[in-house]
Image (cartoon, rainbow, N blue to C red):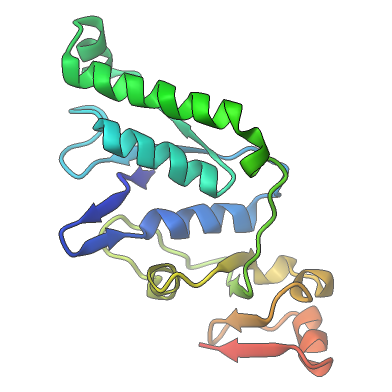
Length: 193
């Protein structure tokens, strides 16, 4: 599950960026990706619903990474809509506005390609995407520094994939695939972190 996006005080929540990039790194580009934001700043989808601002951010964030956003039409949000609650209606309106924008401006994101200069190879096992106790700080640091990067499983990488990137980053202890060794022999830049 994904968290409510945004900046909260001094904290910019970039964990969803890592999750989006991870999902795009392990599933093919052609496969649809749907995100569901279930952990909110205050509560969760069974106890509350997203504000109009957070609905807009969630839709935009998912679209930015080639995905779509699943709206939680259950529990308190469903009940508030049925009873005409103004706050819920404002969130519902925000959903409609952003979905119409995406429908009208398909040219902005359809067939878009990544322009990242850095590829970070994933070990394939031992990845943790816990909500509060993150064990993958590298990905969050890259996102916070606005570094454009892609993620890919080390075991699935091919030389043609590697050639697209200025630098390939591989975590210490992750076995080097043959294609990565060949990439480095041919002058490719590899950083071990």
